[in-house]
Image 1 (cartoon, rainbow, N blue to C red):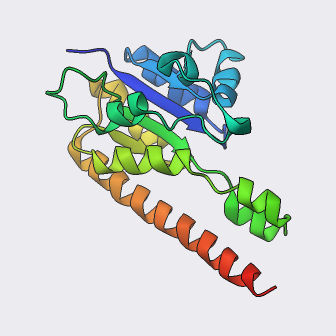
Image 2 (image 1 turned 30 degrees about the vertical axis):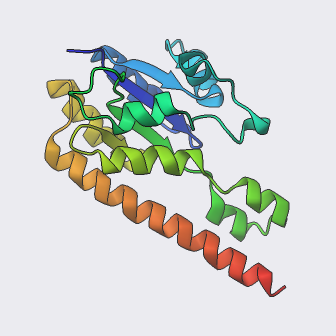
Length: 187
């Protein structure tokens, strides 16, 4: 069996340390974006930067961090394809776009709160929920952690439930962006 990997890329760092420790204790390699990696390292957790894993640095002032074939391919791969290093868990929460709307941030600031990489990670994981666990919010950490502690993996039922939750989340997220753009187009 190949090494199990998890991608952790979160805006909201709440409880990410405990989630990471569960994954490490279960033998997962943790891949992470720079900010999340820094938080985890600061708490004594061993992680590999996604940029080091892919050999491609974060670019465009952080706009491109996780969009890379090695990441997407690892998440989307069918497990019988040995040419790709699989990624088994994606823990990701999105930039707080709706909070930016409530805070009446400038249009330029709002554009920077449109998450592209996080949505891509989550949707890829949810699509491939036969093999991959998408963890789209802090509220799921305990259930995922409990299953991983018990068996080293999550059940197909939980993966499917989380896939549904992921697509509901990304649908609401995109709807909030579209609503904002429609409203501001008239201003």
